[in-house]
Image 1 (cartoon, rainbow, N blue to C red):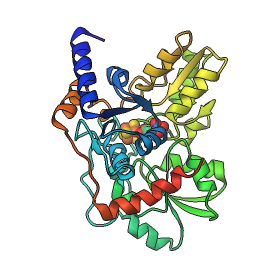
Image 2 (cartoon, helix red, strand yellow):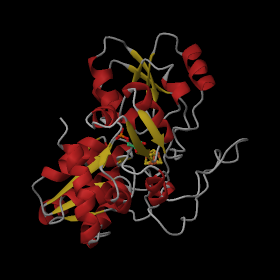
Image 3 (cartoon, rainbow, N blue to C red):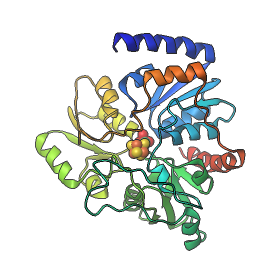
Amino acid sequence: MEEEQKKIAEEILGLKEERRAVILAHNYQRDEVQEIADFTGDSLELSRRAAGVDCDVIVFCGVNFMAESASILSPEKTVLLPELEANCPMADMVRVSGERKVWKTFPGYDEQPGFTFPHDFTLRDMKKQHPGVPVVTYVNTTADVKAESDICCTSANVVKVIESLPDEEVICIPDRNLSAWAARNTGKKIIAWDGFCHVHDRITAEDVEKARRQHPDALLMAHPECRLEVLELADHVTSTSGMLRFANSSDAGEFIVGTEIGLLYRLRKENPDKTFHPLRKDMICPNMKKTRLSSVLRALKELTHVIKVPEDVRVRAKKALDRMLEIK
Ligand code: 13P
Ligand code: SF4
């Protein structure tokens, strides 16, 4: 850490005590933010932490749906999102009803030939088309979408969640790639929403082949938000923390990492004798990088930005999250 960052980190530590605050950070956060966090993890681990932690304030270093989930699970706590503009474009690809949100553009991605935006209907339209079919919702969604769902899932538990349902057919939103992965691994009929993560969906089978040629001895780990053609070529498909567990316990000494490059910080820190290569160097989520140490300090000083979900939405969204958290 640089001198200036060390000074900010010390101030954060002092204020954290004063406020009885806990700092939670996602595995994609900037190195220095992960460094000062009390706990770093994947979406599932962070939800569990947020539900059980003893504190007055949670500073959530991640994107808005994560802070929203923390607030849904722990409404008595003050949940802060240090950068209000830190959102997940995939979460914005589905709406319950009404007008579609204005699409953001993804530089270097949406100008590709053949690129299409997801379809233009609503979750309620989809439910009407498939009456009685349960809705499994990835946590990368807004609270009102969770509130319309039967159960949530994360990249770590999607297969278990779908298998826990007695139904042979399920609606899966919003990630088409996670849905394809779930269909392949559960044998159930998945009705998929056509959303995607622009960081993971850009990876192709050619990228995998190129990385394999460059690092022939490495094992390749891929996040289930990648396309099925990529997942089928991987040695291991799992969540971000699943990749940490796989790399920590594997006898292999070299890995290609098919997810956002923020994960490399922990992989390298926890495995100093192993080598990690990004599958592609541009696997960067700009929203995850918006939070800096200065944002965390400001959040603690000014108690900004408080994330709160309207109570009627919160109660319904919590049911879907609780149902997921009950699955061991
Ligand atoms: P994980 O739950 O695997 O950490 O993934 C979260 C995410 O946003 C992936 O893009
Ligand atoms: Fe959303 Fe993708 Fe960023 Fe994860 S990496 S927060 S899914 S845009």
